[in-house]
Length: 547
Ligand SMILES: *[C@@H]1O[C@H](CO)[C@@H](O)[C@H](O)[C@H]1NC(C)=O
Ligand SMILES: *[C@@H]1O[C@H](CO)[C@@H](O)[C@H](O)[C@H]1NC(C)=O
Ligand SMILES: *[C@@H]1O[C@H](CO)[C@@H](O)[C@H](O)[C@H]1NC(C)=O
Ligand SMILES: *[C@@H]1O[C@H](CO)[C@@H](O)[C@H](O)[C@H]1NC(C)=O
Ligand SMILES: *[C@@H]1O[C@H](CO)[C@@H](O)[C@H](O)[C@H]1NC(C)=O
Ligand SMILES: *[C@@H]1O[C@H](CO)[C@@H](O)[C@H](O)[C@H]1NC(C)=O
Ligand SMILES: *[C@@H]1O[C@H](CO)[C@@H](O)[C@H](O)[C@H]1NC(C)=O
Ligand SMILES: *[C@@H]1O[C@H](CO)[C@@H](O)[C@H](O)[C@H]1NC(C)=O
Image 1: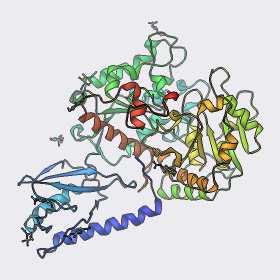
Image 2 (image 1 turned 60 degrees about the horizontal axis):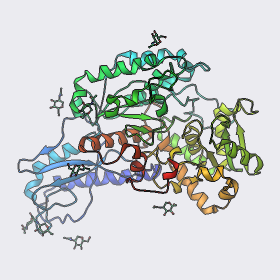
Image 3 (image 1 turned 180 degrees about the horizontal axis):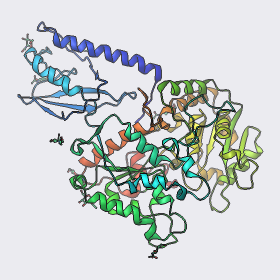
Image 4 (image 1 turned 90 degrees about the vertical axis):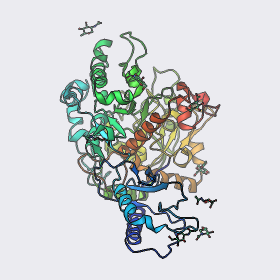
């Protein structure tokens, strides 16, 4: 699934669509009895009215079933195909035709009006119902921000609807508006606030394609990760599950249409045993959560109930133009460094390739290092959004080795800066963000297997230096095209045509819920989930040794 938001191109595309729409209106309301050959004219309709309607599948008096199917195209959500199936042949326009391919006109007047009505609800199949949770499951956790982190003020970090404080642009690294010092674990509230702006909310849960549970699962566990016993860590999430399962909405599908978003990595919600020394709570291992879909910033390769969505970056635009301007600026950016790395070694983690990466960078004249370890010179600037973004903007390639876990926020910062990410493990991105990044990973990134780094076989500077200028240019352009996919728009406003990371996540969840609704038997062993979600098959493949 590859989707792009091609700014200006979209605008042209829209005018064409609008023109087609009026064209269809003319066709329908003119007396058209004199043979229109409706041969393979793809007519798509658009509408800006997000009408809240109960219009679902329309049963025509003579057994004609009109359904609408979601369209995969370049990011325009509100456009749909109409397909009509009946006992006669059909044209691609959706209007019935007879054997000679001619419009059967007696149908048009009444049924077309009704078809247009159904087309006028672009929210069909996209409605989300949001549970009205007691505030202890979300807002109270936010009020309790002092307890969320011992070493930094999360109350400041979660200001502005979760975006954090506006960043001053003294280093001229950013554009004027839309930049915030966003915390990497702030997604619980950003996602919830974005949902409040979702165009297709419904109060009627039986219309909903999926049901959102606005529980701040990440903030809940953040309070208790260190120094609390397992019963304290589990208490709130278990209380939430009791609340959910008592609701009528749960009973319809046993929770299989429910989803929640917790802005932390899967490990924080997957304690293996009941020993206090084990990490995290056990939310995702409960039978209830196994029925639901949970969005996290890093999912488990071996589990099928969690789904990875991008970490938040520092950029939260409130208008399409801000995104287009930023992309244009990144296209023009000069890049003095071939490659850079911002991060710290992991001396206590056996098998970590961080120290190899740092060593290689230190001896290379083409690599710029921002050392983030405690004693490191760059410790302070390392957590400064301007310095990090400046470094990435100045670099062609950005190294993204695993750290404490497979994924890093830095990956999304580098994409935002038009810097081509270099990965060392497929679970650092490819098998994770399947809704947001192209499956063909060579288009926008480089994979250097981590064992080749450990064995000293791979020289990063040489590998990257061998990539032709033309390929580098194409990859960089692809990275810049991906920027809209990995940013979360300012939840206080709404982008016009651009789909952001939130939009893609909701689309992915709805698709997943639809699959779950249909498939009653399991087709893939859960521990092979990473294979099935990326390759679509459980068979032996090149990446087996990584997992
Ligand atoms: C429909 O189009 C196809 C090719 O696109 C053509 O071969 C065929 O003759 C056309 N049929 C009619 C009825 O116009
Ligand atoms: C539909 O089209 C096919 C091939 O063009 C034809 O063989 C068939 O008879 C048509 N069916 C009807 C119901 O018109
Ligand atoms: C097909 O429909 C057109 C227009 O309604 C009509 O003129 C024509 O006779 C029909 N052809 C057949 C074979 O039914
Ligand atoms: C909710 O939607 C269902 C299905 O369309 C409908 O039958 C029901 O009447 C609606 N309920 C309310 C309260 O509107
Ligand atoms: C867990 O900790 C809480 C509060 O510190 C305490 O009240 C409770 O008894 C402890 N539970 C267990 C099983 O140790
Ligand atoms: C999970 O879904 C299955 C199938 O719908 C259902 O039988 C089961 O009761 C659900 N589990 C819970 C905890 O609701
Ligand atoms: C993936 O992208 C690369 C680079 O653009 C291209 O050469 C290759 O053909 C693509 N592979 C597939 C399967 O599309
Ligand atoms: C899954 O279900 C389908 C239809 O219900 C059936 O044909 C198929 O054999 C089942 N597959 C497995 C692996 O049980």
